[in-house]
Image: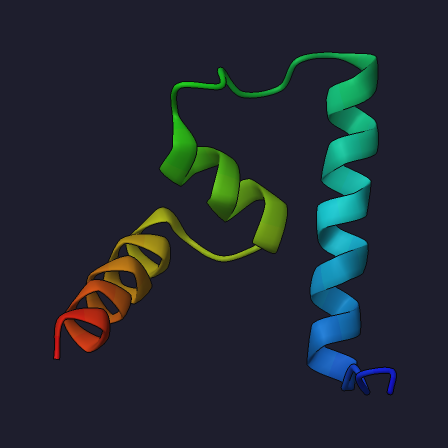
Length: 62
């Protein structure tokens, strides 16, 4: 059964697609700078990426 993607998820998909298309034309951010790339792809700050990553690691360990 297909999964329903809500509007926030759809927006995120479009942001990532737009970033990937721009990357295809011209390397925007070096591949080794993962946090900066994720922030650019999702449209959130690097600090938010760091916080969410830490929360995810904590949740996974409990």
